Length: 383
Image (cartoon, rainbow, N blue to C red; front, side, top):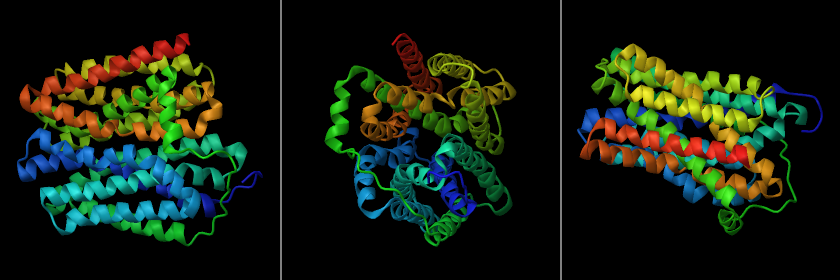
């Protein structure tokens, strides 16, 4: 859409898909309840985020290739449908293997949604409004991430069944699917060179791109690691009750939501490279302080601050890389989405250390990731 006319008739159902995109953040709630309901180890429980985020590594580029053939809206509908099926499965048959299978379906669906939603949103908004709507889409996504812990707590207290959260979001996914399917959207096509698996992987040979892709891997690892372990940390290390601890991760997502808005404003005054350095410093300092928290109140505030500091690191890495290698934007995009698989590998490492050593030892994995991001920010600034 190149003209200045904006129609909410087309924009609203696409924006709704970003709310569905946020449902991958249910992994934290899944981990907490898997430990409580099935008495599994931290190592096994952390297979839940792996079941979700590993698919980004394997499917992101193939989904993009298939999307070129069947269209963005059709591909997005497939992703939403698989997301709904993944949510319904553990609600209907609840066991740890079924829970893993459900989250795996959720991960496949979410990978497709992430690949398809952004380019479809670009198709339905005027070119001069695209940056603002892309930012707003992340706000919509953050709403879903923030609401889920409260909804799970409500269903647990009121009805004694957290799985009603899965049912509610599954129904919402189907309604979103119907809304999008019945909306006639005119998609744009491109004659540019399409990203392929080979063309993406060849870019790993460029040092700057490789380092930035690893940065995406680690920042997503921090995001999913905080989501999946923060509840357990708040209960065991600072003595918070179960329900407040499970809601605590919503403070992290609230911080990310506000951080996105603040970043959009501050980036009009500061360079992206300087803001990357500032964000990385805040990220590292707040993670270290959170691990050393002496009380539930301070820990909750620092959890919010971690989200605030981490909110803009992913888009900053992406934009700085594309800025430097703009002619390879398609391939870079494919690599960045593949690197979201960091959310599959960092939490199991944390879970293994928690079981073998201690909860604090597992949290130090987040510090290692944050140190890398700080070094990367200085490297990018010098370049």
